[in-house]
Length: 460
Image (tube, rainbow, N blue to C red):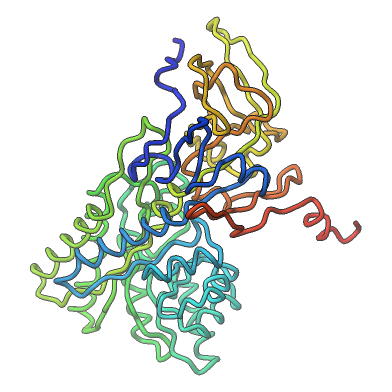
């Protein structure tokens, strides 16, 4: 059955925070995109394409909305913190923005942690995750005094204990628990089921055993529990059920072991829209309210003091505030078996700057950004320049029949995890990231060049 062009029409920016474009994106009098007052063509001419473009004020506003929502929801309890999940996209500049908006930074590698430290984020506002932390990474976390050193397994618990004992320190840790709540989209981004690499199982008893071993160690201090159930989650009930399971584990341990567990981190996974056909994601205040309700219910049922709560939004802050600019290359019509024609439009990037369509089957959309589109539209597939048939940027979109080589296309909602998952496949340099605000544009992360890649070749 032929695809309706109406259903795949290129979306126009509307300035809405629940839309799919950064809020400052608009068409100017000539019909071209502007982002925070900077014409897309000017950005492309100065910085090149492909290029990630972040609306700084939009990203800051989304971070501030999370902080405000959590502060309000947990005002009558023990308070809350928000840690930006750096895996979505992290640079020194972004880390500084998050710190200035009152957020901490959650990291999961040596370089992410070092980036946050170079931005001046104090240890009390840092976290370190990961199921395979190195001795060096654990040592860095202890040196920095990170608030959330999140232990992922019994083996890692023993490793952290050994390192802390050898340094004559007492490591304050959080234990990542697996609640069994299944949520999220693709199997690869659901992280609370049993048969996967993350966490200490509540059902299997390893979470309880980890609590007991932590309490028995002279080199460990139990700061709290951590739960993360997946990514791109629209269902508030999933967060509520995971919170209830984690709170129940906390209550049982505090009563039966006579210990204090002062904090719970409920992780991230908060959804965003990628196309206009996607459902609206709950607002930060809705997520915060659901989590606070679970905490209040547990406090009322158990009589225990409320835990201090933290969360780790990343995608919901970074993704909608960013778009990717591409330059159109070759254009080729392809006859399909149903008698229709699909136009293939190649751009100067692809799966090396957005792996999600190939990895997860994720859907994106795009719009003509360098000029106003004509009224006619053609069914189009936007593809990259890599030697893979699965190198698809946008699977189906209706774009102007007058599209031509040299035009600019803009793909929204690429702030997570475009640059952070980018690769050098086919030896393409990774695109840079530009921040725009108040009519000005500047580098956050410079684009790589072929010279950069060859500089690492020992025989070049």
